[in-house]
Image 1 (cartoon, rainbow, N blue to C red):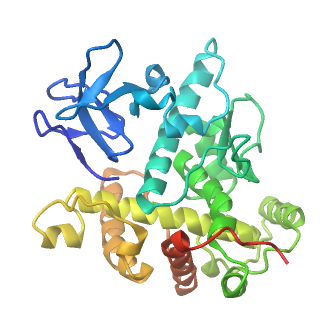
Image 2 (cartoon, rainbow, N blue to C red; image 1 turned 180 degrees about the horizontal axis):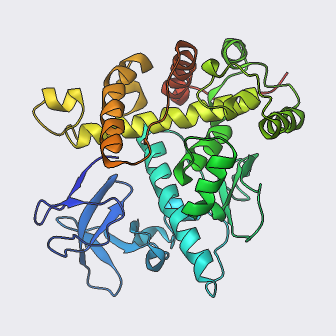
Length: 357
């Protein structure tokens, strides 16, 4: 995530800020500018203008639920792009559902921001765009197994917003890393697979690296969970970024895609806070927008990211916390990440042309 600065007092703004914590100036995220900016009240009620501009905006209708995104008032939308992706709202009489939904929406806004940074297409699903993207955020206490992706619809079990529940699953499933935004990045990886991997030499390369995605998906996942329950998993985990990636080639893709997004976000944050080698060489923060194509290879990204990851792990060790980056990337995993990077950087020149065959 890039650093955002208050134009009134030069104080740093959080991505989720509604106002500057230093000078109280009202602020909001303006997606056309890809920036959190100071806004001032316009002549009409509930309307705002960006400081120094005349265009009028209003806040997303979900502002009272924590959304700080602004919309052009003349376009007729009442929800921002991120909120338009979500189908339905929780029962306002259920505080637990509202809190979980709000936490998931905050993570989704970060996801949508990052996808925009990479220039990946984000189109809300509708009758006019049936292949667009939609999110169902489901709050069913006691239920499990509802998180997943199905032909452009991403379902997230809102119990994942509960830290204790997530920690319990992390232990039971032998996972070292499980987060809300991690789930969203994984599931959106499934969505982008047919957009990014073409049915030609690319799919052949995919199958050489990840395996044949045409093998039966349900059977593969049943077998994965059977082995996990019985402790008989003999997968070569040096070939996968996580144990779950070994379940099926499409899960391997989604886990690798999610890790790709983790890495880019972590490095952008480090650059913006002056923690990376690049920012130190520049004498401070490097607060630029980083498109995937800005780096020719993922190896060059890793070369700058891994020292930062070692630093934050060492800090966590000193604080007695669990390591934020509990990954060891083998040569095989790096090669898969390179493939994802190549697909993302090339996406703007292609049509959606994948079909299993």
